[in-house]
Image (cartoon, rainbow, N blue to C red; front, side, top):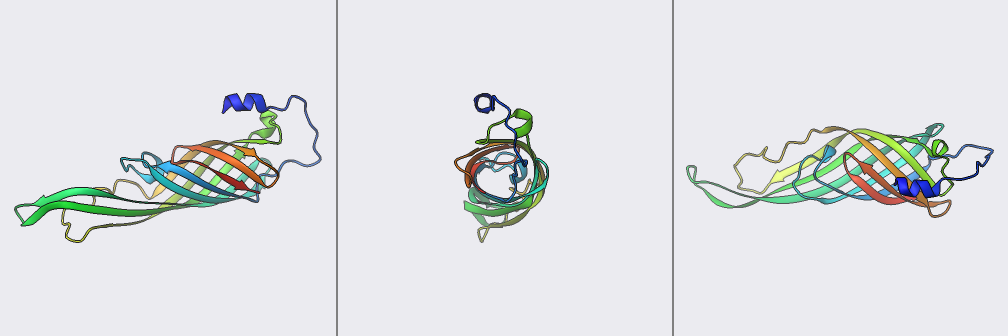
Length: 185
């Protein structure tokens, strides 16, 4: 990202009549999650869908309410000879919907970036709604996959490349789930 920033900096200072607005932006992203952040430890990567809408709050600062979604199932071989439960493969199913708000500060003026690029640091705070269940007949430890906290706080660093005045592509690297997606202004 620093390599791209070096080539994207605007060499000559341009005077504008009004500061750039970052809000009024719908961000649709797809990420790969499963190992860190508010998604808990799953043990493998899986797709995560993300949606947020940014509002301008102050110069170079936005807030964006967001919702994400992921779902998965995993098998667990279990049985109990002492209680007459035969060994077989049982499945654990989980759907998680993280909801929260993301605060973003844009560094375009500080970096003197041209109009095609936006660079930012952000933090997100929220909670996860979790729906989980085991297959019928499973009487083992039902908390086996329940290590994640419902509350989370993540850090983000990212960039957006503007394809035109209405559309952009973004990459958001996060301590939670990193996403790549489409920004609609």
